[in-house]
Image (cartoon, rainbow, N blue to C red; front, side, top):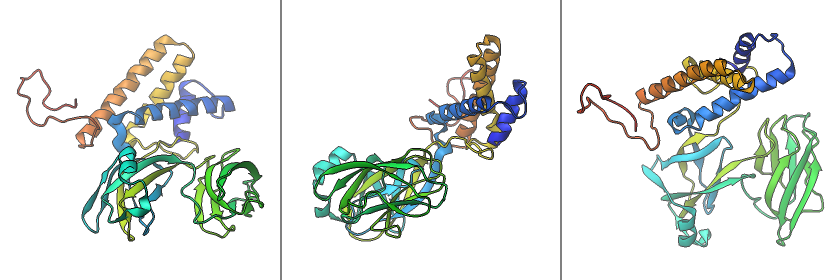
Amino acid sequence: MTLAQHLAELYREFKQDPSPDPQVVVRFTSHLNKIQRKLLTDPSFSALLRQQMTFNSTADRDYYSLPPSIHRIITMRDIANQRPIRFMSESEYRQLCPDPSAESGTPDWYVPLGYYSVARRPSAAVEVFIKSDSASDTQTVYWEVVLATGATRIGSTTLTGTTAVSLDTTLTNISEVQDLYLSSAAVGTISVTETSGAGTQFSGINIGQTRGRFWRVALFPTPAATVTYTVDAERDITDLHQGQDESVLPKRFHDILTDGAEMLEHKLKKDRESFLIARAEYQDGRKALRAYLAGTNAIIPGGTKRIGWSPLGANFPAERWY
């Protein structure tokens, strides 16, 4: 079901006009997204957020930024050389490798460094430009940068759509962008480039977002050559915004969102009897979805699975998650 179909069902349930007041649309959409987030933050349903991606290392570059959709890494491996890349904590990495440039070789470890608002640093101390691929992007961009001298500068710049504009024409020696965000959601895809509007892109902001969020990882030792790494990851939860947006839930379980939204609306209206009925339907849907994912052998973090007949008799389940 699309967002539009979920909303149409809620309008019928609560006897609303097919084109209700905008406040009703916002409230019902908020209910649907809140229920989706509650479901997908449950480790039992994390398999619904899995994705796989690849990225290439560069010789003598120690850290890399994964796409904004990535929430966390599950596994990383070098398929070409049949090498697993194992997890290392940042504290251990800093102790073993105070200077990443001094440790060069074939990586055996990856180190999560957390979220950053920009993908990487400029390649040199440069002037920084920003532009959009949509002429409608004319809002304000706020920024905080570090100069080659070590000084910090903050300021704001007005976007001019598809025409690249300098963050500040007097700042031609920016060595790092610490933060960069928009006053309102991007209409198009925002590009942040070095040297000129046609220079190398080192960060960006996606449509509908106000800032970038890049999951940064270091490789240890620092790569000495280009290698393609395959990452099994968990992507972040994407809210339903447009009418044709669909939840990542299997289609047969889309009614869980509608049931959950009804539950929240009855709770808001303090209709206890209707709330309890809707909650029971919502909880039944959750249980069915959990059983469905367990039946597909999806990995449930922290769980173990007993396979076969129970040795404890007929009153005990033969297969369950703990």
